[in-house]
Image 1 (tube, rainbow, N blue to C red):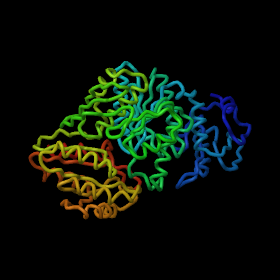
Image 2 (cartoon, one colour):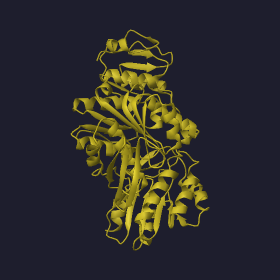
Image 3 (cartoon, helix red, strand yellow):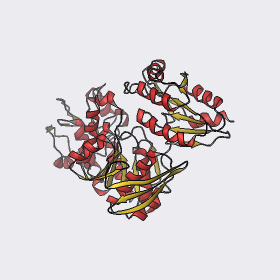
Image 4 (tube, rainbow, N blue to C red):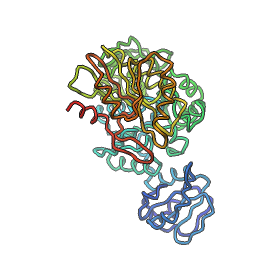
Length: 478
């Protein structure tokens, strides 16, 4: 695309005359710059992208998106008021406005996003629809699987992937939408056909400051979709529904709603319940245990129903949905006990998985967990208290300590653990903590490895160190 032509539909403050150039790519990361790139200068929390203009131009950038008074005669310089929002707008134009050619489904909330997107994708595909997926675990575009670095990528990457989906003949894009991506305007300008709100619990307060701010970030998504599907059992969900500009549909177990789960049967390997909607009831079976499985499958049922699918079409997808990697995932081991890997890394997430495990464990629950570094510190004691009250034995260990000392994070988690009667120990090395849990597990016990989920690395300092809990477990029995 010729930049000069793209700018006819783009709002900017000023621009020099070097716009008669071909552009094929847009990024705010100099490592990703190629010949023909637009380099976006973002004044971030730690660095200022304007400081790396020389490097970007040297690597092939033909245009700069800036907020400062930058003068160059070798590349196009486009000045805007907000480079984050402008990047999203220009990225859409560069790739031919691909999101408008897809049926966009967004899922947001603290917990459940990944599982819900996977179930929705399964239902769509079971009914002959081609669906792409963007989320915490992976991005899936046809047969192409891309490992995720963050829940919702930067706008340039997003629109590139949307374009690839369009080229692959994909009709639906199902994506997780994080609160960070909303506030940082990565999804600016995208209109969603429908969006789901799962829940809001203590997390990311290092970024948002308060739960009210966190809620308001999530709420923005529901002003840019046709249909909003919201959990009425969640107090923040009810607040979002009250002020939402979209057409709202609610789902619940306890409160009155448009899609209500009734006559719930909890089993070791799944749940069975009736969905009451529109004066009718339909039976749903989901092959994952626990109350959270009811919520995840019910959110999917409501969303797909709102999009026009019949109950029978939805049910046949839900019953075969495998869920997501690292979510309540059982590792097969030659032992008289079970080992489960789960991504739970918030007080509420830990509560949900541990209460579910209590119904499946015939012996003790042994929990190995920690808290990530450089993230919301206020939730750490809460995590310790939740695990302590719901486990028979716990091992507090490291979990992506990043720039913090793992021992300091563990001490903070331990503050909450001390309030409970649970026996526990602290082992900084996560591999050793896992091996210790396996060594003390016995007949009928259930060992929960919480916090890492699908991740195959640990973040220590600025490095991603390879680390697979599944491999550690399997190697233990070799």
